[in-house]
Length: 282
Image (cartoon, rainbow, N blue to C red; front, side, top):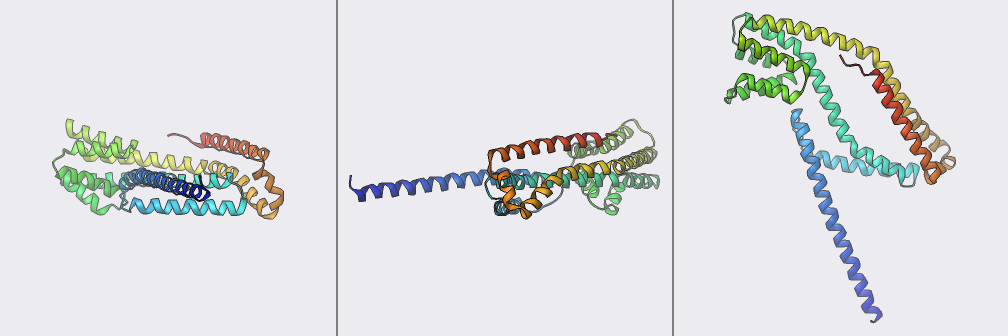
């Protein structure tokens, strides 16, 4: 085989390999985008957030590349940039969890006032349907959004009890399940629903007050957990900037990588222990 023919064959093989890699990368990108957008769309719809999930996926990809490039510029090597990119890819899940938790806390905080409003409307002689409409108009999001879904489902032919059960399943909150159970029992067996709602509002408000006191008493411990977890990272960044040559063995030798792994395990265990101590279920 002549040299020119051999070069042509090698070039064709290289081109074929490049095309195959591009195809695999395209399929992998499409699969990752589909999984991300499906999960993100569900999370956003539960929060009544109608942003395009594809925009969030593109933002995640850009942020991952930027974080990995910055980590490579500061630390060099491949281990720290790889960990930084993994953390950047995991960031949207953390954001969705934080957004969901904040929304649930707002719903719990708004619930006693809405129950008092419903009780006052019922004592004034209005029906429960009209009382719900008034509560939706007078209550800000996010609880008004959930009540609006209940009213719309009822107008489409779903029974009120089933619409309330759907809301309780969707939110998975102990307070909402308690309210739905009380309203369902009061409608089935009779009784003064307004008085029941007022008593339930006082109970939920007392529970929220107790939980607030517990959160304030344990906030120092939670802050200590964050400080304990972030202090080694801060010191590592500061020393890498101040003593770059002295810190290089920590990132470029197997012994240094082993030390980093050991530190990461201890940091994770310390954070989990502190979180377990300061987490009190009421």
